[in-house]
Length: 331
Image 1 (cartoon, one colour):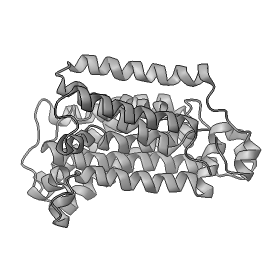
Image 2 (image 1 turned 135 degrees about the horizontal axis):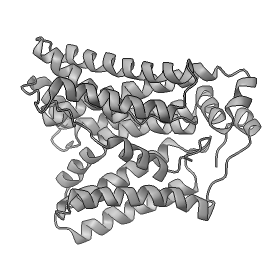
Image 3 (image 1 turned 90 degrees about the horizontal axis):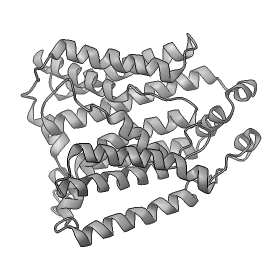
Image 4 (image 1 turned 30 degrees about the horizontal axis):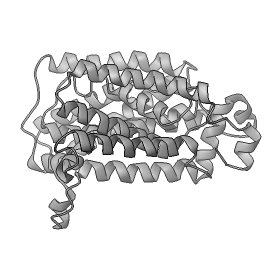
């Protein structure tokens, strides 16, 4: 299966151009420590983007992933107050994320509700729960082990001083590889493309459409939990506004990465390159002290542009359902 097509090559050139340009124009941007630090701009969001990519390819969407992160972090905070250690905190986050994903999946698969409507509702529900419980307060004082997980580098546990990449980047990279193999190298992945192209025809071919959809929402909950563990460890606190608006960043990474908003095509490689591109771009703007509202405008502009460019250039065209099921090839 061709998981690296023309759009992915364009993105790779853009990543090289952006990093080279900012490296020449901003003092200190190209230093190893700055480049390593820039990965924190996209690693946790990139985990959400991996799940979002699979959902959109399959013709679904989850707008509640960032709110799920906030609820997972809240569960960690309550577990911490109850005296739980690092394993207990991680378990609380994972169970909460899976529960949120299961509720989304149940409403979509069992009640037949559109995923965009369901997850708009659960976005408000999950975020509202965090706000009701925490108010304007924050939970702090997490164990050092969690901080080491969120703020540590590969050098901390390998003993090799030159490995300064953050732990969370390694987690994201491993998750990206696993998700890419899952999508592009297995029958399960080919069936996700079939779902996105034509769910009715996919059902007639024997694909358990609802089971696949439920699995995707559970995966989104799991990725949100993993991102919550890393982010909570990195900032050392639980707040109701944690990861506020990150669902739009994740969608931008996915669409900019070449995943068709209508479903049926896209790649994990493109999503990852878009995450690196967007993360490096916003990190550079931060070094230039650009206001956050301007960064939001940039992200919004990239999202609109990412949807318009493929329409204008017709860089990629979907294959018919039969080709998806028999060949498993995507250009």
